[in-house]
Image 1 (cartoon, rainbow, N blue to C red):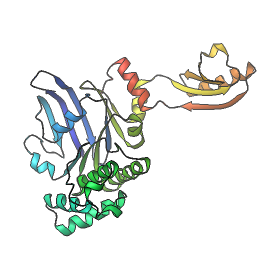
Image 2 (cartoon, helix red, strand yellow):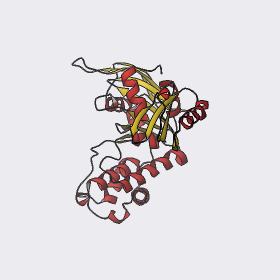
Image 3 (cartoon, rainbow, N blue to C red):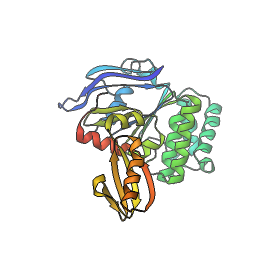
Length: 303
């Protein structure tokens, strides 16, 4: 089953600005989906539409089979949304906030307490459970916001820059929790971020956005195949024949492009025949950043 289905979605604001232009995509259940692009690309508008906060100008949306426009209240029982500025109460403790929001979702006080302590433990906040929120650091607040979003065990989780302001250790604990939710509990994660390297570490599928348009959609390997017609190779050598058409990256370090993987032994042979001493040969995969910027230069991929 698909957790999210979007067909030809369009959003034009009253002042005439087109925030989304003919967006179509599906997100299967249990997927960590990276919805990526710079500020102003249309990510936040899409999340608001998916949660019934805004109404679309055109197109269709379904989240868990529900229409966010007409069934928003029912939908919100099964979804969680984390924005960069999640609202909580400074005078309540960490666990007090989680008890409060759990009960808002119809959980008992005891259920909220148990679930809240479980989440605080996983996010490294158990020692701050009885500390008032006003004493929390920015990173602690961010982790508690994620716990609040997860308190009612949502089936679909919408996250906007969930690791913003977190140190590496906290980021690791958040990532481990998201992977556990996706792989073990089947939770669908719709992750909005402009941090392409971060998204590459954790996401299964990607939607690359720019100026309200979907540039490309698919797995990292699919995007690589569709965007680039060649491979890259990094060679460390003291001699690089001119006929190999390489780019120098540093002292005795060269980058080459080639069409087929079978060409690698031929490249090595050519260097050796010219008297080169090879220290290392490293195939390079194109990163999500490489793909994104190539698409910006070359235009929209067929999706």
